[in-house]
Length: 91
Image (cartoon, one colour):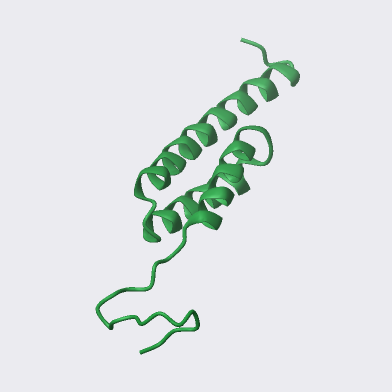
């Protein structure tokens, strides 16, 4: 079976899936989780980390998922503390 590049591909060779797009979006969303809309970008980063793992980038996908989960919790805690301080309910 000939492909567009002229190279033959046997049926046993799987087509290589590229995880670059998912990795880039996962890292961008992970960074945004800490600063902007953690409820939106946290889950998106986790989803793109899982898609990166599915595409073969296991190590970076796991790092993206763990960091985005930590950043999500951190952003929510800091936001709650700031809200309490600004509302006059200081500790």
